[in-house]
Length: 385
Image (cartoon, rainbow, N blue to C red; front, side):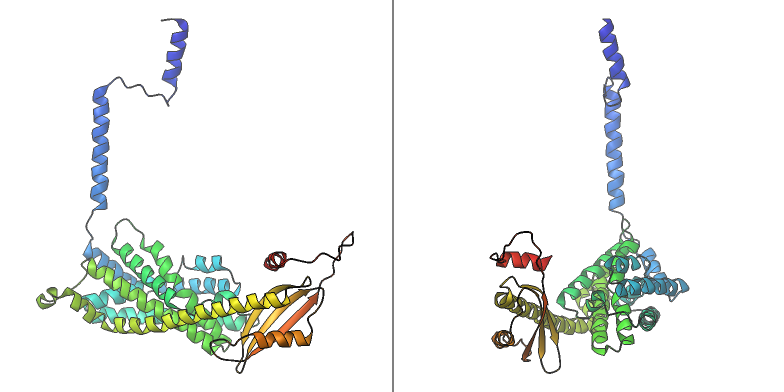
């Protein structure tokens, strides 16, 4: 072997990325070990549900413990300040310490196992948590009474059918995590807590501001989430074999499930109808506002005028449409009146009152360009900035 070949050989031996296999028996041994690891992983993945341990965990989390009330108080404070500051990130962060999943899971297990004592304990814990979070919201609303009601708070006052579907999916995820050996209940509990804690605190803040109608909307959202989470959790646990049935019920397991969740099914049916109507109303309202805004832009976005914003404010006897307009020349009263007459009333039939708030724009330019006007595309791009 030449000296150059020796150097190349030494270099290859030193490089860990170059593997030279001279032992077929060793390769077979490594393949067998890899197959054994795969079988162990597959066996771990197919491990059966420990029904006894899951029941014990659910029962323990359903108890009205000090930890439950302390953690939910802290979650309520964090969520409250996130709502007041209009910060979605802070609101989501509050869910990491919330513990509202436990009592709902306890109610779920109590219904499918037909255990009245566990049902009473879980309901007591749940109502205690609801009262605590609402009280935290009221206290924060009183302390910061001068702060305006933010968009994050208002977003939780108009529940619709989509909120129901989110709660159903969240409850199913929480129940599946509670019986799975590979998922963390705490992580999925964040999604469940997100559906309960912010609207409860928002309800308290609204009660402190005497906004009864908005507070009722937040409560309906909370109630919807609780019923949906409980029902979907019951369905998942029932399918997974968590049921105590008689011999007669065993032959008709579907009927037994419906019987034990009959009240939840009735409430879920009424909520689905109500929230579907809400969703249709919201969609119709959005279509009306979008078409009206487009119509107003055609009327007022001319002579370098730009519509910055259009607000729709309902009053008892009329709908106020407020147009925030910037430009060179303010529209006349006759133009505003003509525009008002051209706007059709919404679904509620309230007459429309149009108000234009005009602010003059001073144009500074080195050269005379008075003959240039904004196109409709340029006006829209300015309004969106």
